[in-house]
Image (cartoon, rainbow over all chains, first blue to last red):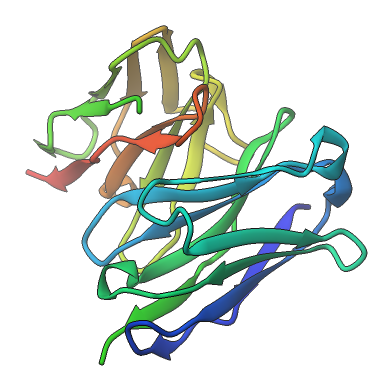
Length: 119
Length: 108
């Protein structure tokens, strides 16, 4: 069974950095593409960034709102994905979810980790 | 960026009724369309992917249809646990994958 578990969220001040993690199990991690999605309080979900498998180039893509501030990475030896967030703004306050798509059973989400950016 | 538009924003219905939610894409997303249910304090729960395939464990009263730019989610007979917010999401075009703004199902 696919399981995604996020961790590392917390309270930070504007301009600070934070790294959140996603531990994955139950599927072929090295061949999976992974995305980070966030949801601000009272809002709908918003795609943040994506990383392809190394076999597909390992490239990353980002939403305009976070480009040049956020970095998605992966450690296939540990079945871990990461989202490094730099120069955080108050509008980055949200629950951050890791997600992955499998053509056999669709999208899988973790339970999310909350990030609050406030002075 | 593909814009996903859901209608209506809010729908007041009674348990046992049949309900249809709509999702429109600003350009074709083929069949790369998912539907989610979200309750307060919970992560979105996948209901439908690839426009019409029910996710594992999803009751048969949920069904999805459509392709291209027009999609629908139908709940054949609403149960009390179905009152929630529903989102559609396209994953045919990047960047970015985009969500609709949501439809809230509330009890009449």
